[in-house]
Length: 265
Image (cartoon, rainbow, N blue to C red; front, side, top):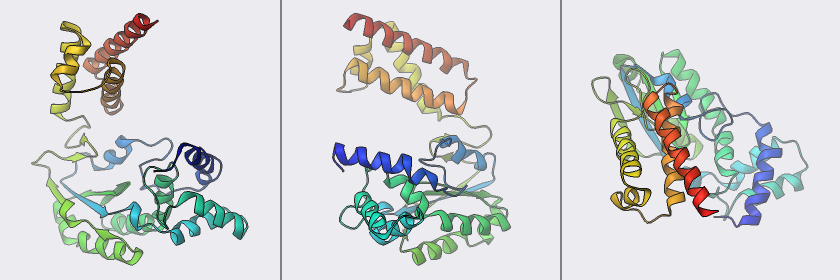
């Protein structure tokens, strides 16, 4: 994990340089203007979904791969080396660095395009959210395509491995979840998440915030708790903006935060 000064430098590298380089259309994580819904939408209402995971994703991106990305900025060799060294640690892409997710997307750009084209020819939808790859289509098409073997071979050629323990096959008769979003028919958050939010709002309004924190077995401040709750509600509204129940909960938590801030003045 980089220190605060290095993180500041890396954010400037990201904002002023790396964002000038485009990632593939199939990459949906850590990209401006894209969200979890963009990753899930292509798979809504599909008969069959396959989810694959890249093993030790960041650890397998080395300084040579990062150097090749930095070369695309068109700077001198010494500057390119300096930028590379500022974004790697022990010759690898470190988790927790502001630059790492976007660099990883850039490393995967040609992989995404090749795999995306291959899938498109077979009427299979493909998206990648960091190390999570999702594919969907008709059951017959996906199974006959030998998809897993193709992806495994392509990853191997890049120096990556498939985490086969996390390979998941989901038909439309089951609950199909893509990056936390149910996609069987229309996108929505899981039922258990809605139930949990509803219960937490009940405790906050019927009793008080500390009671809700206690019921959830948490060790956080009231401010931290409400911020987390508001974030989960915001996520639900991002998936379904017209959800009146979540809109009401959002306003309720905003009022609780305002009252809490007023008490602390």
